Length: 193
Image (cartoon, rainbow, N blue to C red; front, top):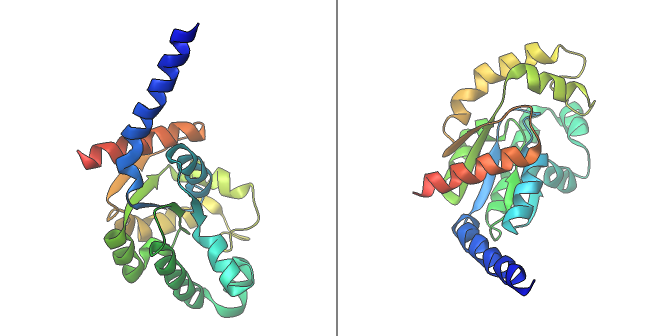
């Protein structure tokens, strides 16, 4: 029985060594709301042994209020300005996995900063799937009181050209989060080849 244990011990460092190059830069997940940037990002960070950061949570902490409150009280422009500053600060920290809000990468300054200091990964999914996901929660100011399919279709038309400037593209579907994590890892490895 000692031989299998030895094999497990030697297999783990090999896998860790395989992931080491992926830990050299912050990995920033971009894409439409509901695509899984936060939920998949947490799992990706766990696999890579990196910290996970959520830009929306960081913005809320910096502003002392929720994103919905920021939108309602200050407007989207003020939110995007604060978001850009927070992301800039986060990108100066040691490597981690960073989930961004759906509109963050659309800002040309934020996009340039991310592509310069990190590896950007566009998580893509069908609008109908995203609409089902965002309908489950009431914390999305852009879809509140509106048809999610219509809003997401319009957002995709506006935002997809910006998302297309991400360094890595990963199509996701209605699968377990770890399937998306595996697809991201494969795409990151391929982008380094």
